[in-house]
Amino acid sequence: MADKATDSTFARRMLGRQLRHLRETSGVSVETAKKAIGVGHQTLWRLETGQSTRISALQVRELCRIYKAPKEVEDVLLDLVGGLSYKSWWHAYREAVPKDFDLYLGLEIAASRFLSYAPTLLPGLVQTQPYRRAMIWIANPGMSTLEVEQRIEIAARRQSRLREDPNLGVEILVSEAALRHRVGGGAVMSEQLRYLAEVSELPNVSVRAIPFSATHVGLDVGLFVLLEFPEQRSAWMSEPPVVYVQGHTSDQYLERPDEIARYQDAGIRIGQSALSEAATRDLVLKIAKEHDEQR
Image (cartoon, rainbow, N blue to C red; front, top):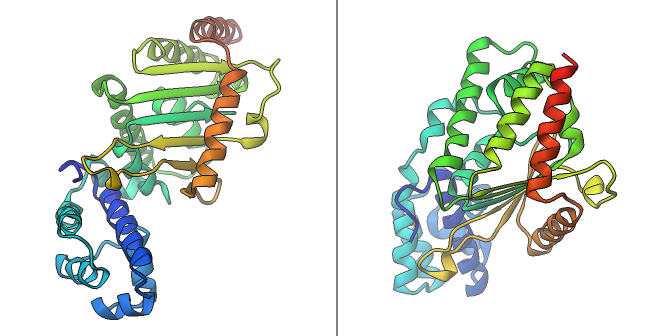
């Protein structure tokens, strides 16, 4: 059963994955399934991929009936339907959420562990407000001040989990390049890197840098975030990991086991080239001082 505070985005994903699994294992055709609940092919596809915002308990019961799902499975899925109305905090900022990023926010809220590789810019979870503000203005020079500040508020809410949720585990692998890019100027970067060193002291956060001297697979892989989710009381309901790959015009969410395995392997291999946490803090503070001197 999903937690009552599960964001509706994640609840839809869980529900859709289970309904798709039931259909495929029952041998019921797509044609039969969509006729049973009176929807078209596109609507059924959206439902099974967690993108549909319109799914009723009656439809879920009917699908469970034709799929011959066990009563306990049907009860769990109906519980998920009941959670689809829950809106997490970020929905209040929906107009300011970048295209395709709403799904990521829903997944991030539900995740219990992150592995983030940052080759050029620091991850959003550890960005200071001046650093983020500078990047928003660079990427969106025509954006209104109100929307910029709303995005800053969203980032601050996301970052609060680092200190408030002891069950959250965060591993950040960051290229030395991201530490040296002068985003916003020397003063902004100096403050940013000192904040990064501070965050890296949190018991649930690991920050390790990959120095310029290392040749590693991350140079080919590029930016990614691997999200893992907590186990559910029913093992079959536990969500598999997702890899988020941010693009300039659109984002990717990778779910296939072979894709996940490749990124998990990449994370391990990149980590093998990274400095220790202590050595990373030393490097971060050294570069912060260099930014100070170059103002």
